[in-house]
Amino acid sequence: GQQHEEGTTSSSLLSVAPMMEWTDVHYRTLARLMTRRTLLYTEMIVDKTLVFQDKAGNSLDRYLHFPELQHPVVLQLGGNKASELEAAVNLAVAYGYDEINLNCGCPSPRVSGKGCFGAALMKEPSTVREIVESMARASPVPVTVKCRLGVDDNDTYPELVEFVKRTSEGLPIHHYVIHARKAFLKGLSPAQNRNVPPLKYDWVYQLSQDFPHLQFSLNGGVQNLEEARELLDRRGEAGGRLHGVMIGRAAYQRPWHTLSDADRAIYGESENPCTSRRQLLTAYSQLCDGKIEAYSKAFGCKPGQVIRKMVKPLLGMFYAEPGTSKWKKSLESMLQSGSAKSVGEIVLKGMVHIPEEILDASPQAKLVHETRTDDEGNKKRVFSMVE
Image (cartoon, rainbow, N blue to C red; front, side, top):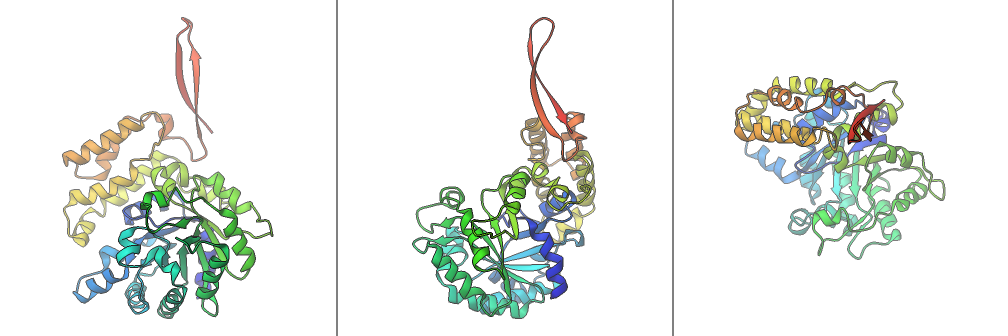
């Protein structure tokens, strides 16, 4: 296990959160082309799904397979029974994930209501202890926990300390990813649970002070690499430091703006793997188009549905830049008509709407708008990319 821990420790300085419907195998390919170092997470996979599909004699590839280039990648599992989560880990081991994470933070009623897992588990630290102990027994790679600050009325700092203590003491559990808000299981929707409860970053810094032998990553509200860098450099009141920062929705809605400079800005590399969006889109299209048939077979669906899933993560590629709405319209209309036979074809048609200097701008380039007045006194807004 030691080499794994060393391999993944530096990578978790920055990670992209597990997000349902978003961080699928295609999105992760796109993210990996922009950053070699950032730790990527799967969507949450429910333990019962894997156990059931395996019993039915079905391949688990559609849930668990990922291309080699995606490492380092973490599998996030959801569930509430030690035996079933252990069985799920056993099924996943062959796929070679770098870490396995237990979801104790999802407030979705589908997850925490009927199934009583996700954030609801925080009310039962002894159950969580039993679960992570079983998972760690089955896993050759580190098992980690993602949780909230608390849930419903169990929302004091001492209760959070108690949760961490009871789920880690004497166990090989070393890393907690903390979404720095509490969760309300009743009365708030999942979307509201991501925005309404206040962020308390200082609690996460305090944990790293109170548990110096454990590692804590902070999740919640982080919008960009500048904020991530600042949080990593900051020390808590008692000198505590974060092990890592996890970015969620920003990394999906604005993928280029959020991730393309990560290797340089966060990891200190001399350069980023992708020099421009033209290069990124060309490389991504080629990787996708070589796989349409294989995914269509593995997922048991038509090629058109695979193409749709592959194109979906590209919609925010030119977020808030000239041409972005035409880019999105072009992609969406081509997906709707179903005429395109490849991702490359859709991307090339969309790129027509994006100014060359934006397509060729580097990850560090910033978009600057200014108003200029011509000789006749007409005002005109112009943009430029400043390196």
